[in-house]
Image (spheres, rainbow, N blue to C red):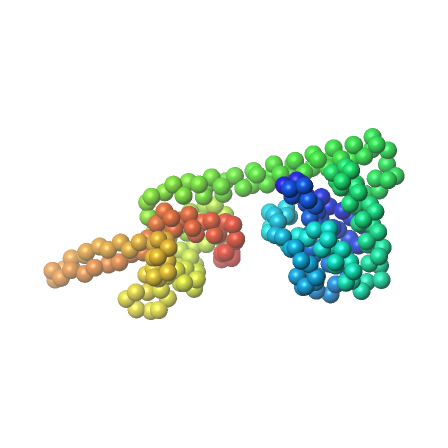
Length: 252
C-alpha cells in the first residue's frame, strides 16, 4: 500500500486518499463531510456500494477506516444537496485525480509552480512521511518485542504479575483493577462464593487460564485445598495484545 495523500481545499477542507493495488481509495467520511451531509458516516453506508476498510495513518496510529472508490465518490456527489457539490466535483475530477495519476500525489497550487518547485515540495513531503513512519516504528518496537516475548512463554503467572507486566509497558492498571475488568468482561466468575475469581468456562475453553491447587495442613491436622487462577502463556499473549492494540484499560 502506498503512502497516505492529503488534499486540502479552502472551501471543502481536507480529503485523504490512499492507493492499494493500483487503485485510489478516498476516506469516505472526508468526502461526505465536504459535500455537506448531516450524518457523513450514514451517508457513506447508504449511498456507497464498495466500502472497503483500509488502514489509515493518524496521530493515534493506523486506524481501520471506511474508504471508497472513485465510483462511490461520484455517487455521494450526485446525492448531495449542497449547492457547491458541482464545484467540489470539478476540483476532484479536474485537479486531484489527474494529479494523482500523473505525479503520484497532489501539491496545493501546483498549477502555479515551476517543475523545480514541485519536485522540491515533493521531496519535503517525502522526507516528512519517512520521519513519521520511522517515529511510528520506534514507538511500536517495545510493544512488538514485548508481545513476541510473551507469545513464547510457557509459564503461567498470577493475575497480579500480569498487571505488573502491563504497567511496565504503558498500560496503567493494578491487580485489583485487572481482576475487576476480568470479572466484568466474563473471563473470571464474578458471583460471590467459593468460585469467585475463578476462570469462567469461556476462558478455560480458550485456554487463557489454568487453576493451580495447593494442599494446606491446618494446625488441627485437617487439610484444606486452595485454588488460584493463573494466566497461561496463551492467555498472556491474548490479554496483552488486546490491551496494547485496543487500549481496553482506562487510566486508574
